[in-house]
Image (cartoon, rainbow, N blue to C red; front, top):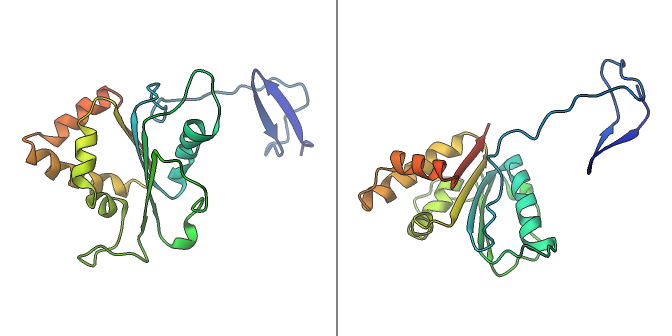
Length: 193
């Protein structure tokens, strides 16, 4: 075990507490990779609509988004768009951050699957909650400055696609093809596990 040390690397610091092999010595060269991918990068447009869909730990990248949009002060960036978060959790005791004060251009909708149901008596999952706002979401999604980010359990992806298929079809649009266009334009971003 190596004692706690902080190794500065450019503007980042990596805190090493335990090294499983025990072979790392102070001053040793360490190879670090990343960040990888670009699925969860915010759009640069401060007037964008950002729709975030999260289950459980999938909230993590969106906490960063919200922090940048509403709490950090930047000379060259002030978020003026709409941020809308749909957060799915199993029980209300899993709801974090609900006491935080929300800015006017932030909407938050919870889906608490083991405690809430919709009008049909179905469990309240993210896609169930989204269905309550389906037409509004679809109108937003047709705009060039709307970006959707989905992070969390893989199971929500199919349910969300099911909602979008019927909404797109009502406008004579094939959802699978439209989603490909959105992905290509970096407007539909998915990181599920």
